[in-house]
Length: 503
Image (cartoon, rainbow, N blue to C red; front, side, top):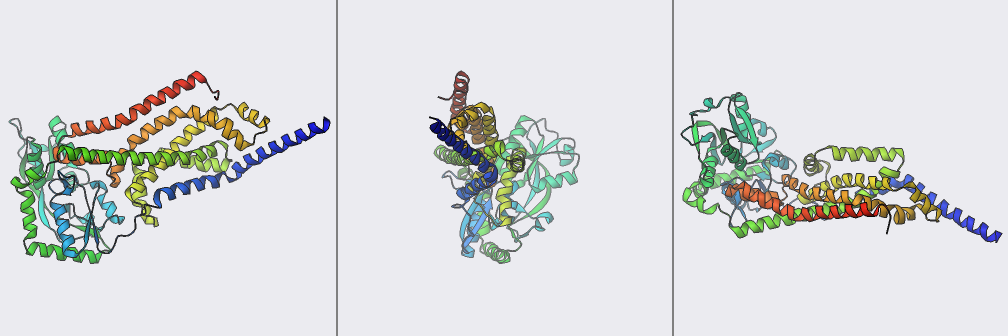
């Protein structure tokens, strides 16, 4: 009996020693595990989606797709417009295959500088500031800045000077904002993401006037059926041209040669008549119900796919991250804490710009969807790791000691004793994070991902009915997030009823 007791004690001591070794292993190698998990995440997201340099015969062109009649979506769901036809004609003249990317105007120049596309054919005005960063082609049309006000009997504005001490709307990133701020500092300038937003605030009485391109303004007023009218002469004329990267001199020469040919054979003038003749564009700039549903459904599918991938990868990374925050040594904990606080303390929008536009500067070019998934995954992991860490802290230390007393190693204690209880505690908060990150996918439209909000904005740019389509998008999100919120409530009630006891 004495010998058997000694043998049992030796086995127990051996098991306890194994548990200590497992714990020491995590303290010593936890950082390597964390780096390995991070590398796996990066490879999973980007390995199959690396954006390889295009073939020599491709012409990659960027525009917004939300600027009728220059670029917008047709009844068939295809991007069309004056700029699109110009881009197509240039591609034919240069013997290249056209590839169009739709992106937000306030980030379109950054995408060109990051080599996301070869040229911007999106009615960009030539300015000295832009010319210092890119090279412009010869102009393909000339337009000008026009002020518009309400068309009513109570309107007392006859020129821009009458608008001093009043509010005027302009598009974000457009040249009109800088001109007005420098030449008319007493006018209160309000910036908007699109003309639709400007029209909405004009009708709501928040602003008294707006400034935009004269051709665009007249077209959009007629298409939207809104009671606005131009006031005064053009503020100035603008040369509209095509910017390319300064190093791309060969393409610039080809574009200039193509524009010269289009101008001489009359095709450029014909395109101008096609898109600015009222009898033509009124019939063209419409989107049917089936096309709207198809665009919204396709965009929502992309939204759910990106959100699902980000949540999966984020949770995979959050688990070792939370263990490191809870059990690692001081040096590793300090590093993880800094990374965690930095990710949670900076705007997700800035992180998206940094990954999409900044990564090419260090030799890594990710596609828009890869950039979105990677950024959201990292952001999700930072928040989830804090929730999981709180779950680990909620488990009574006596549970660990009891597991070790039963002869379990530290890994076994974590797997069979600590983790089930910690996960149960963290589950309601994790569900809230899931709901939040599904909604946060709306931000990825800024890096050219055609998710549901961007698709809705494309439809709104033609229909001029923002409330209807934003309400539809809100309903689509609610149909997904509401069941998740109710599930989180059910889980929370079950946890409160059962306490921390494991089934």
